[in-house]
Length: 311
Image 1 (cartoon, rainbow, N blue to C red):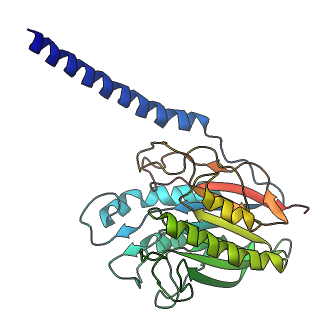
Image 2 (image 1 turned 180 degrees about the vertical axis):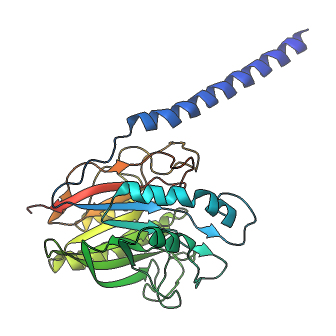
Image 3 (image 1 turned 90 degrees about the vertical axis):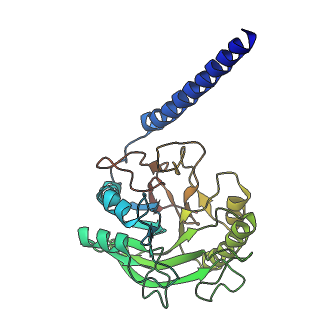
C-alpha cells in the first residue's frame, strides 16, 4: 500500500508540475501580447528603422518550419509583418536560401518581399561571389537614395569574403550601406549586424571590430546607425564595448526571440543603435504577434523612429 501511495503521489506531483509549466507558458504567451504597444504614427521628419532576423531557408530540408515547405507556409506572414512596420529602412538577418556552401544565388525571402513591395529596393546586397547577400537592407525608394555599401567579417581577416570567426566558427559579418535622405539631404551609414550566438569570444571580437569601424566614422562627423541581432541583452559586455565607441542603444522592452512559439523567456537580443547627432523619438516597438495565422520567424520585428538631435 505504501508503495502504491508513493507511486500515486509521484504521479500527481508530476502532473501538477506539467500543469504549472503549461500555465506558465500560456501566461508568457499572453502577457507579452497584452503588454504590446502598437506602432506609433510616423513622426514628421522621423526616420523609421527596423530590424528582423527572419531565419535561413534550408532548401535541402524535406519539412519543418525552415524548409522550403515551411517557407511557403510563412511567406505571407513575413510580407504582412514587413508592411505592418511601415519602415523607411529594414535591416534583415539570416535572409538566405541555404543550399550548401557560401555563394547561394537563390534568395526566396528577398525576392518575395521586393516583388510584393515595389516601393522598396535592397541595399547591402549583390552577387554572393563578391558580396554576402544574407543581410540586405530594404529601403523606401521615394525617401532614401543609396550612396555606397560594403561588408566586413567578424574575423582576424575581416576583409576576406566568408572568413571564419575569431575561434574558427562559421562566418558572421556586418553589412552596411550609406544613404542620403531625399527630404532633408542628411547622410548616414547603417550597419546591419548579426553576432555569433554560441561563442563569447566571437561576440566580443565582433563588438570590438564594429566599435572600431563605427568610431572611425563618428570621428569624421558621420551619422551612424546600427541594427541587428546582437545575441546580447541590455547591460551585457557586448553592448558596453559598443557604447564605449560612442554608440547608444534604445531600451527594447521584453523579448525579441520567441523560439518560433511565442515564448518570451528572456530580454531583447535584437537592438537598434545610434551615434551622436541622431536618436530615437520614443522607445522601440516589438511586434509580438502572428500575421495571417503564422509566425514570420523565430524573432519578432523591432522598430523605432529616429530623428536628428542636438549633441
